Length: 421
Image (tube, rainbow, N blue to C red; front, side, top):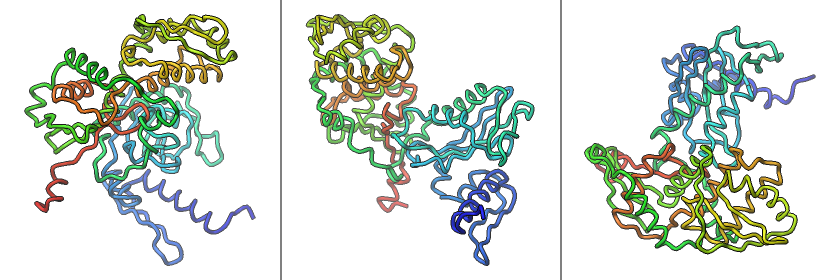
């Protein structure tokens, strides 16, 4: 009497059989419903082959290998690149010592590894195996044995995050033109404009910033040029075209510049050494009295930790005198108000001024509004400077909001398109 409908129960059976197939790839598994063959997983040497049988060969091919061997915890398996994310966690498989588990600490570690790479309400596809001393894990905390308790959950969490992050920060993150890609819902430039906060910085100023930084950046190294990496032009004032050894890459100049700004500012924030720049002409900003009172309570920490120098002038009026040095050239009154409103929103939810969450949010917003916009023609030296800077970033593949920066088109795909293969 505790069973649900036949359809629901069969769905759970299929999921259970899939877990066994993933956990034991060398075992031949068949599932029949009556006389109908529903699922079959022949013996396979590699996990990727099982996934190709159970799911999609294209997904299996796109998966990135995960492998980290620590002293007490080993993590291996396969994870999908961000563009393969789903709307639910149904395809997140985690096995501890060969047993399928649902563990919040491991799920959190996976989420942190993908942080900044996924759109909102999207979840990665993972097939992870954690090997740990049985003495360090209690499997008897759930009747179905699907939950576990680690004696050192922080260690497991750190190793899972390290393993997945290492796999993601590879060129496997660069989407191909043939891969399915969900709509992001308009560009960040458009979304900023819809909020009533258009980016009003002069394109000439932005280009000047790129040239200034490019002069301080090493050019594309000779060995890269020998491998065939060369900037060959710009498409519609928006995409930089780069020839590579494997084919061609299109780089979205706005999100590339956004990533550069983001990492530069976030590095200063997390190191506690944000350099402030005194504004030649201070800006007068107005806020509602309730927000003004909240802002006034955090003036010292805003200046010390975020590089924002404000002075209350009375009522809801503030004078903005200092701004983070790396972003001061593109500052407008509208951008300053928008950024401070986002900070106030976080403070209203009891966030700390020096918290990592607030730092990333502020850095992402400032980077988007400061980055060079689309339909901005760039010279060859400007494009080379931007690409050289991007190659030096910790994550040159995704903007802080999860959009891809680079899309690749392999030489073999081009040859097929032209009938050469």
